[in-house]
Length: 40
Image 1 (cartoon, rainbow, N blue to C red):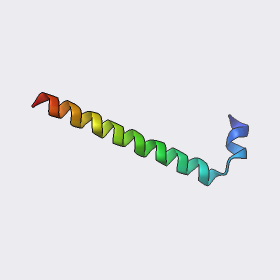
Image 2: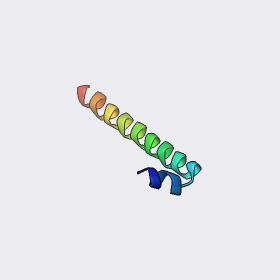
Image 3: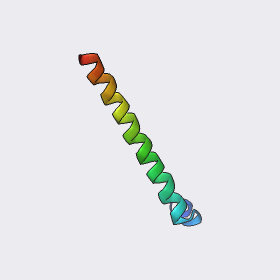
Image 4: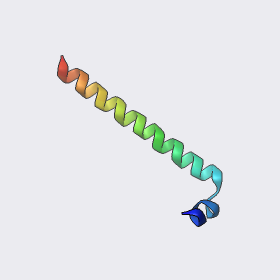
């Protein structure tokens, strides 16, 4: 794990993390839309 972090540039790691976070946010938003639509 540590060697992986050191071998990978920090910028690339940060960009991948931000992309993952954005995807998670989008997925949670979609789930919220689905549940709110189902309640109506």
